[in-house]
Length: 101
Image: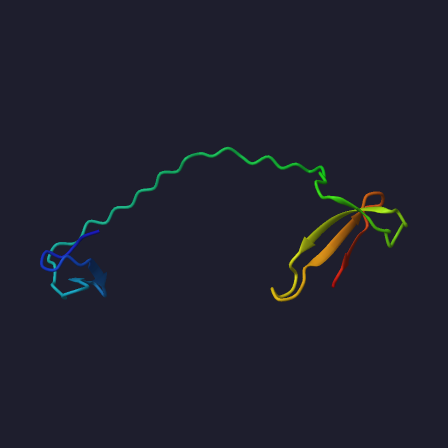
């Protein structure tokens, strides 16, 4: 990146003309353009396919199998001024359902 000798603004190349963006001073020499990038090799991310349930378990009847325990979590699925949506997942048959308030 080159800067103007008069005002210190950036020298730009527009439509084949090399001039200062601030004062319009025309530069005779072509600005030196360099680019460099340093890329570090990062280790891969391990993907675990098994399902690990860290959700709390609550007492609620499963709508599919009638089991009395289910995992519980909430997500804001609608606008912020409305209540969260509660999701349940049966510990026995893995059936998932939701309840709105």
